[in-house]
Length: 476
Image 1 (cartoon, rainbow, N blue to C red):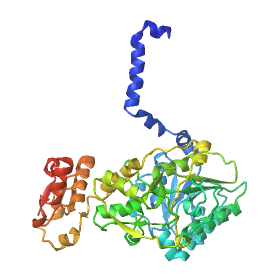
Image 2: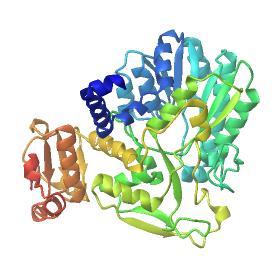
Image 3: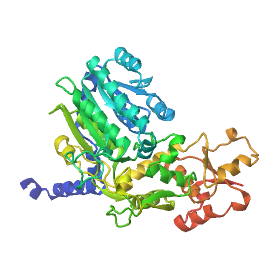
Image 4: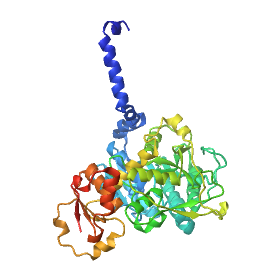
């Protein structure tokens, strides 16, 4: 204090630095530097074997593997590619510390061979089919893929002395909670075959736990978002499009693959002011962080259960309204009246959200992405980036029109990075995102009698910036 009184300029500099750090929002950056992540990075070189990530070409498994690979960890990925993305796998295969085995966890011989061939230290088990509606239609598929495959995997781990398992479970094990928010002590009464299959897998793992075999159960709530650098994106296979989750359904509308997002409305057990179901959304990178924290933690018990959630309830209608703001596209809603359906016949609860206070207090985990806007912004950037250069992007119903048009040029010889078919609202937004975010050159194709319609109207009314300012070319 005496120094500052003699040198007031020092005090001014200190106050100025604090103000700059605050105004530049750098404190949020400090949140991203997690002690367990640093500990894992320092310990990576000491890991003798591989970390096995099952379902590595899927949404969760790929984000987990990418984070580990960047830390220098030796990652062994396994996937049968029935629903995995080859594009996603290509991102991971760029790392020299990544090995991949295409295999079926339901084949005992293949699983044994995996552990015999590779020295595995820890297993992160993400592999699973994961659509509630599909599980109702095909419960045997879910019991085989989730419960049975997990049993075979655990038995193989025991045979080969692999003692640590992080099991990706789900909030679906809870069913309809009697109290909210859900905690790890909430009774498990699953409604769907998906939830029951996960709970049965948990119960088998628990039955095998010992001082030499320990496991974490991570019960994820609704996971959204994408890699913040845009390298990965949720990429469900086309045949499962009818089971699309809320975000992918919104994207189907934006890119003209469906007309509206269907929203259940009118459930008698709902407490939402707008009448739609309520969910709790957590970013995929925060899910990855939860796994990292638990990998860096010493077990206190042989089995430990963790909710991974944001405790931020949001209705489906609020979610879609947020998606509209993030994308700049009006996303229509088609309401499905379920007011006459029995609550007992429903395969999912009307309202579900959870506390992750145990995870916060015992591991230091915290949310990197605090708002739903932040979550969806990462997903939107990645979606735009991966709806990209080697194929045409269909807006509205223009793909059929495009296929019947005679092209007066050879596509391969054009200088454009992206061709967007259809000059509608979503095309205008998409063109703007491609140019401003990724510096892509863009061509928009439209029928002659449609040109100058929605695309120009949107740019004029909503942003006052014409497509031509971005160097976007239109062909009709």
